[in-house]
Length: 153
Figure 1 (tube, rainbow, N blue to C red):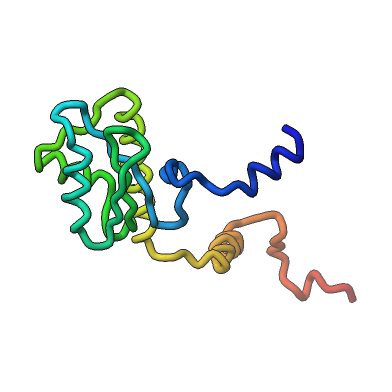
Figure 2: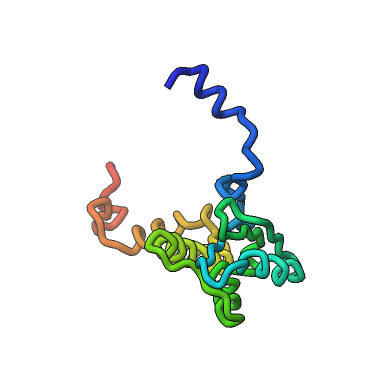
């Protein structure tokens, strides 16, 4: 790749039609939910249903039978949204591609939620654990000879 092409790619403005490709930072997620062909118009009905939820942005997806949802992980999860849609009678796309993407998304969101709920570690004090362990561990730098016998006279 030429340096000129790299600069063009680095400074390009993302296409609004492909907003689901642009990664979000932190706990804000943008996901695509795809539906099966039958029954028709599931995506449109799902948008009408989900627009009423607080802290959830819903839009038409890049795929014909898909929608794009944007949410904070502390409010919603993709698994929770899809489970609710299934309970309401929507049929999600179960192609191999969608199953793999769904499994990865569920795993990453679950892991990120667990990490967000864990207390912060004191990284600056972590070396103290090793210092204490080293002091109590017998090593070659210790001399059992009394100090008065070790001094030069």
